[in-house]
Structure formats: structure tokens, C-alpha cells
Image (cartoon, rainbow, N blue to C red; front, side, top):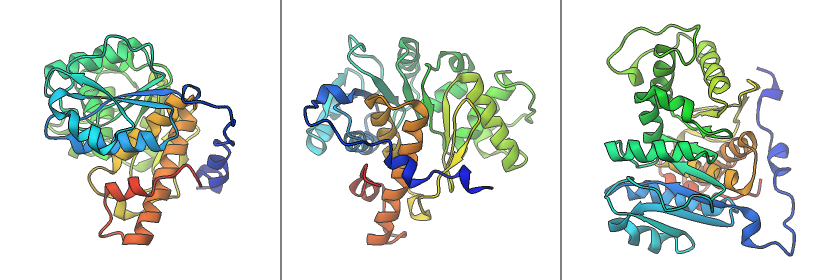
Length: 300
């Protein structure tokens, strides 16, 4: 693989010119995040903290009413939108105030959550789609067509297998073949890394979404097919919650007005860089997702 295929720190640094001294919070976007259900508020807290670190002007977090104090205490800078159920089941009255959305971490897959996700996708905000939101889409292949323009999908390996299995099986991306299986997340959907990459490129082209295939050397694939790979990061990041941090960070960049491709590239690289800083300070074995958040910075 040639060097041009890797994200460079210089390209990421160039995405953050100095701020205008007369700027105000309204100049930097407003992110809406539907994250966390009762018992899964850690995901919401990590994603919220990362969105706030993105430099986004405002961050609104939609969580169950019963769980509101967890976010208020951990991130007083965030605005709360409250759900009457112990999981994501409804949207705020108006989404027009938001410039981008993030959905998925800690969400669960209740029927009401599926309906709320459908409504969010139909509204059309550029959206970072992760975790259970990806699993819902894989289970409802008609949702592929609802993915808004300028969105970003951030699957880990298991979620990617489910997505690709569903996309191939339901004709969303023709030209590929998968064997019938009871658990796509654990099956060899692709026969090689090259075939995996071809499937990801096909799905990105079909949906118009940037796909972030997470893992060692995370791949960022835009609809153009010009994929790039992340040189930052380390095995210490292979801990629960790391992906929630990434979702929040990319959502913040998308809300700021970054293109979907730039939001994904900057998010992936800076997330990996924070992981490397955490590993240097604490060690790969002991670091966890909250340490990644602590070391997160838009400074390359």
C-alpha cells in the first residue's frame, strides 16, 4: 500500500484554521445526539464528552428522563433533550435547530427505538450512525435508502458484517455473494480484506455515505471510493466505549460544517492520536475509553 493511502497529520491540521476573534457559538454548529438507554448511560457520557471536545458550538443530548442527572453532572456544557421512555422512542418537537445528528451508542433495539430512528433518518440531517442504529438498519434493509446525504456509518467488524450481509442478501449492493448464516456478525462474509474493501466501497457508493470501517488501521471510505487508512492508534484502544468517543467526535465535526469525508478523517485520526497519548501516559493495558476522551484534542 502506498503512503498516499494514509491519513497525514498535515492534512488534518489544515482542517482547523485559527478561529475568528469575533466568532460566537452560533458559528460552530449544533449537534443533536440520540445516545444511551437506561443502564447504558456510559455510552452517552463518552459520546457527549467527545462531541464537546470537537469545538462544536452547541451539543444537545437526547436521553431518558430518568437518566438526565448522569449527563448533567458529567457534562454541564451539554443541553438535554428528554425522552419519556427509558430508551430512545421519540424526537424533540423540532430538529430544524440542529446542523447534524449522531445516533446509536447504547441505544438498544426496542420497537419504539426502531420507529424513532426511522423518523430521524427521514428528517434528513447529516447523521453519524453507529452501534445499535447500524444493527437496526441491518435488520431493516429498507432503511438503507433512508440514510441522509452527507452521513457517516461507523461500524466495528461485527456490525460491518451484519451490514454487508444484509446489503448483499437484499440486493442493495449486487455483484457479491454471501452464504446463509444464523449470525452474520461471526461469519466470513468476505473471503479476503480486498473483498471486504470492495464491499465497503460498493455500499458507500450506493448509500452516498462515508463508511468508517473500524479496527487496526481503520479505513475511511467515501462514496468516491478513494479510501484512506489511519496510521494512529494502538491495541490499548480495543476496549468498550472507544467507539462511542469516536461517534461523538465525528458528530461534532459534522455539525461544525465539515464535509462528511473530512469529519470522518479528522475524527478517526484525532481519536487514534488521543489513544496514543493515553497509552504513552498510562500504558496500553490499563487505558480505557475515558482516558481517550481525556487526551482528546483538535491539536495535531
